[in-house]
Amino acid sequence: MSNNFSIIKLSIFWACILVSSQLYSQKRYTIGQLYEWAIENAAITRGMALTEQNSDLQTRIASVANYPQISINGQSTYQSDVTSLPIKIPNINVQETSKDQYKLVLDVQQLIYNGGIVTLQKKIVRSNADSEKQQTLVEQAKLRDRILQVYAILLSYTPQKKVLELTKDDLDRVLSKVKAQFENGISFQSHVWNLEAEIKKWEQRMIELESQRSSSIKALELYTGRDLDDNALFAEEEFQVNMGDFKNLRPEWQLFQIQRSSLDLKSKSITAKRKPFVGLFAQGAYGRPGLNFLNNEFQFYYIAGVKAQWNLTPFYTTKKEKSIVELQKSMVQIQEDQYKMANDVQITGLREDLKKLDDILVKDQELIDLRTKIKRATEAQLEQGVITSADFIRELNAEENARQMKGLHETQKEIISIQLKNALGIYEK
Image (cartoon, rainbow, N blue to C red; front, top):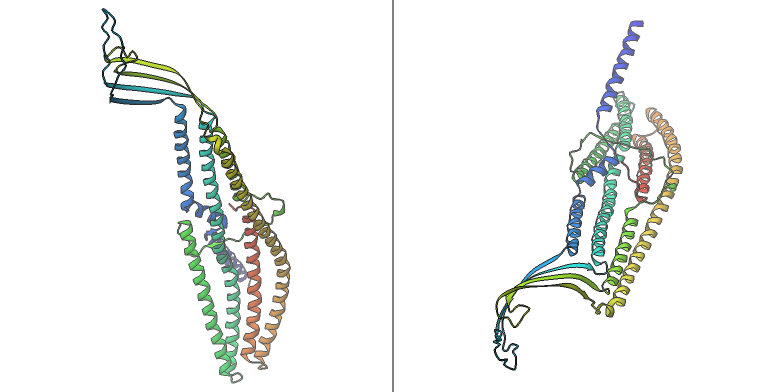
């Protein structure tokens, strides 16, 4: 007897080890992993590197204005008249300037001051790149929301399957008893048929559940660009965090700030256009005539100096252009206010939903306890021939529905917790 008991204990021990190893080796996917893979695979993410390269190139191009500006100009002309002396001087032969004239000029200009336009241009390029990158983060946040919708379906699969398996166990057990009663002549064939029909309905529900899981996994494979294990677990995680203490980190807030900064830079560039331009210049040339127009030979010559230019035209339009910028700032503020209201409403609603689900889950368990008692009572009554199989199936379905509702509410609580973190810009990793 002692040896048999030892064998039983050893068998149970190794069975537990086997089950544990299978569970441990089974792949598990968390919402944080799915977020990370989907963002890596998204085309918008690859665009961020291109945005950075584009910004770097545009900044270099804008910086070229600070380098010496070099150009080569050539000119050949024929004119109807030239400068000449109206008198003749004895013993002095003054050559007449040719009417066909030629000039090849190397022109070099160096900017000294232009009101800081070049610096502002580089800042505007950087700000535009930051805005594009922040917009990408906003799109990534929307992608996370889409991933979460699919994840919610997969997360609800396990509790639904467990409930259906419990229902199937009850159906198989009762069907076995009813068949035995029918064979002994104390039950009806219709009772057996009713239970068998209910098992067929159960099989249909399982097909639908498995199909839903399969299509959701395929959707995640498209989002993540990875082959996911069909038998993997989609892990449930605990989110016991007081999210009321968290700062809202949604990327939209930073986007609005960047947009305002870009408009401030635009306003400064409008002001800079009204400032004068000062620079150095040097010209080296070869042509006929040179600077000495009395010499009609081809010659080299040069000119160097300081040049100033002040364009007064922007004074006509500065006020209107700045008014446009202020209108654009107002539009950004309106968009931010609209988003803030929608975001606050969403966060408040999600927090209230979490409180509501805590209360509902308590009632769910109480309802399951009552439904289980009723099912057991009807099962005993069915065995005694007091009620029909249809009466038992009705109570069995009521218990199954109560269990499914509890599983649904538990899944809803977890999904709403993740949605709340997403609404606050706190993403799982």
